[in-house]
Figure (cartoon, rainbow, N blue to C red):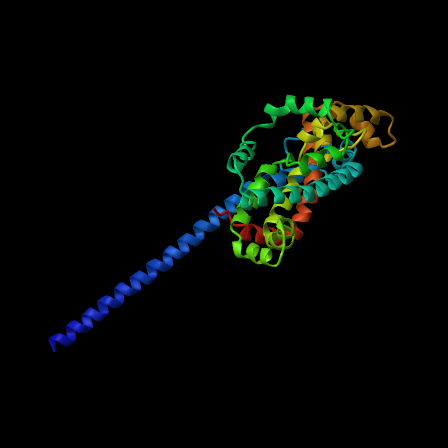
Length: 337
């Protein structure tokens, strides 16, 4: 009888312990979920707050810039800032030029860096590791350190009679020779990807009589879709936002305007635009030009924020269509070796 009671007490004790462990595990899961939610909400707030501020300022009437009661919600909704920023950026022409330059440069970057990455991964030769190390060193050298030498090289020399200053082909030539924007990163990505591809694929192609070029084009490159998408998206975005090479190569509004370059020159262009509003038929523009608002640093900052939003808008819209492809390409592009 005593043994039976002891067994029942033991079972009851074990049951209570099991219930406590289950309850503790559930509490741990709930606390972990709340903590993750708190961190994600905080990150979303940090990321989205600047974008929300830009939207709020973009739709704010210029006369509200000195109103202390206006914080996030504009007192007067207006698209006047977009009109002014569009004039400052020469938006239609600059958007077309930037899109053409970014697209063509992206394609050239993909081809040039893929060839270089494949060469470093598979075509071993004496000094290849040292050469690859020199390529990686270019990542840590700031553009300012090379500014004077680049400027002298581009202004004093030509490429088969083609002037490199103020010519759209200059950026294409730089990208083709691996001197595009952050080309070293793309070479590194392709090299790491091709090193992870099984050598049996190349050997089977060589058995079928394919040479190095045919093997690269027909076997290796089709298997590098993830790396191609990753490099393509980064190359397009970085070229879109670039102002350094645009100013260095002389892409100006009179020859070949770009959005980022026009934004950088906006503080110089905007006063000239405002001074022409005195003869404008638009009464709102004339009223701004006739007061101190048009030359207020807060107003210039307001227009600069609106212009930056107009530059970002095509990229944000395009991201909604390619985000799934971009995430998949990041997952497939393994960094190995």
